[in-house]
Image (cartoon, rainbow, N blue to C red; front, side):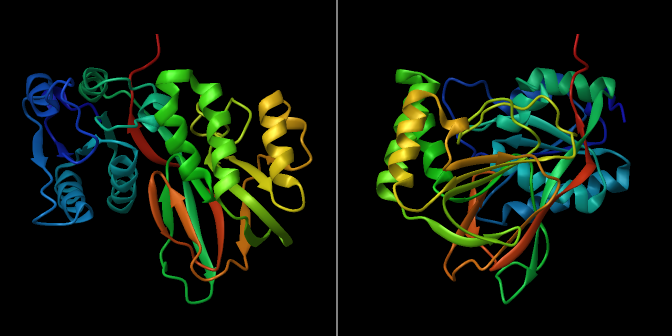
Length: 306
């Protein structure tokens, strides 16, 4: 719905999301653009972030309004899960170290998000969903993600790329990251869609990314119904082949790299102690699970493109 002056919008601000001194105060920006919005600063000493989001979402549902969130990708992902639970639209107000979902959505700053809320401009987007399928895994309910899921070395690869990109550029930083993680990590063994695999990395994106390689960076369709799956295989000489392919720009043709865009992915046989990463969060992985998508399940405010 259109929420003039932000009336009916309940915003949670996560002050831990990569605060940067050069950024304008998000609360001041919100109060100027949406004076009738309810704004809550999350206090991690008083309650978990999920509890703060649930309280705001409950109030939004009772008022026929929307949930808003100021934070980075991890905070936005948590807010999306709560918005799905309470059936309310989500306003993403970028304010973290990384704002990949907001950028892919077309929301570059808080002012753009506020304008979309005021005018009622929104789209429906897919949400990635991981559902444990058997075993005593730590997770019982589905886990949702907006950007990426991974096993293996992907989180470290992304961290290194982000660290080096400002100095040497994105492509060179990715190559450096690939070389580092392959030198320092071990393959993960699992059964993927019924086939035993040894993998340096398994990546599943919520939607098709446009770039090729192990660390894709941009999507243009957030409701395509597809997973973007990329695998770096383990095995004899795989490490050397991957590094050579990355250095020569031939990764897409390498026999130790595979990519597909399915609607569903089954993983089983994961060893105890394996961890997974999703939208910047790290958690124990269940021994077996299915990844698919809740298609067009979430309504998100975004400005209408010119």
